[in-house]
Amino acid sequence: MVRLRALPLLLLLALSSGCTHYRDVSSAESLATVNTESQTHTTAIRLVSGEFSYVRGLRMASDSTTWINPKTDRLVSVPTTAVRAVVITDRRRGGRKGLGRGFLIFGGIGAAGVGHSCRGEEVFISCEPGEGALLGALLFGIPGSLISGLVGLAVGDRTIYSVPADVDLR
Image 1 (cartoon, rainbow, N blue to C red):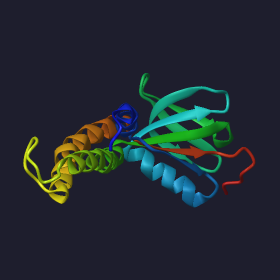
Image 2: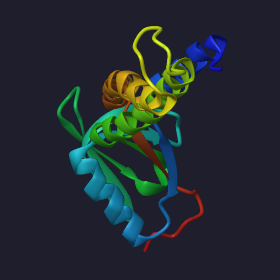
Image 3: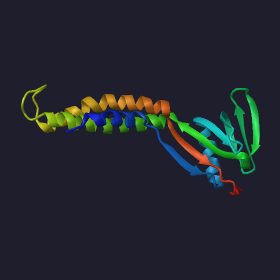
Image 4: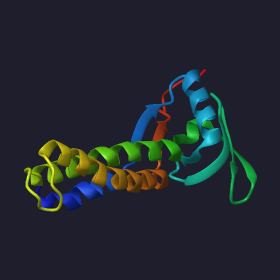
């Protein structure tokens, strides 16, 4: 039997469908990845000084990092050693993950709840447990998938690229 007390927790988990991945910038290949990803996704930078800001046109090299400050439209350049991390948010990937998670979580709740209540007798509708599970998965899974997909689009899928202080990127 599905406990309704756990439902708000499951809803909260499904609605906060965003992931954060952590990677180190430790080679020329990882610099190239950051440069490529930052061109098509929302990008922010955190400096060693603690300053955090959203940026456009980020370019990281072994010796310097440049970007355009979107508030002033000015080019900013700092030594790469002054960069603590780059945060790249992919909203489309977050939406896709939200769709899948929402269907699994809400579809599972629906399959368990409706499948359990179908015993071959007419309560809401007349169905066998297997049919009820499929019906519940679809009735709960589709709307849950759409809601979680929209939340995933809003939250996005984040990758945090950390720049270790002692790494030589040449």
